[in-house]
Image 1 (cartoon, rainbow, N blue to C red):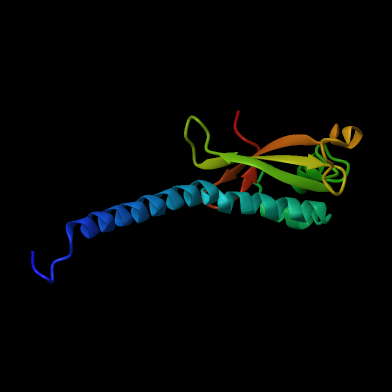
Image 2: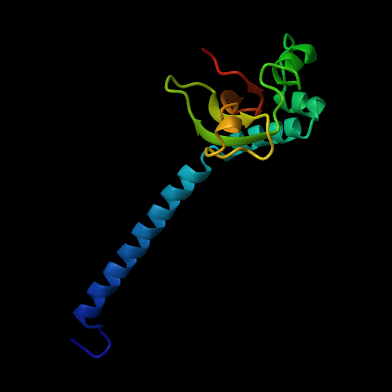
Amino acid sequence: MSLLEPAELEQGKTKWKVLGVVVLAAAVAVVLYFTFRYYPEKRAVDRFFVALTAGDTARAYQIWQPGPTYKMEDFLSDWGPNGFYGPVKSFRIVSAESPKNGGSGVIVAVEISPFAPMPTESDIEKSRRTRQVKLWVETSNKSLSFPPL
């Protein structure tokens, strides 16, 4: 061994440090992937419900990107102030997942409430009116619809 060659002990420590950094970077990458995997789809749903909670049903209908058979009257009968799911005053995105049988979209589960702010579980009377809705978000254009059966 000459003066310019590092000792073997230092080479071993360097290998472990490099391996530790690689493992840490891989773990961070996996956590970031699972955290932001469905971010665009969740954002589309968030924009939709923000418009609904603000009472802007025209904007919400535009974000929904309906097909030719889903008219504004149909939309209002589902999401309007007197609709099946309405009025929506607060919401919380619960989960997002790809369908088990594949598909071109993502299913996003959302809790909606006719009260603002979103009631806590300890407020039994208000939380009883909170319901969960699942929406289909088409990955290609972020259009919304109800999930296929």
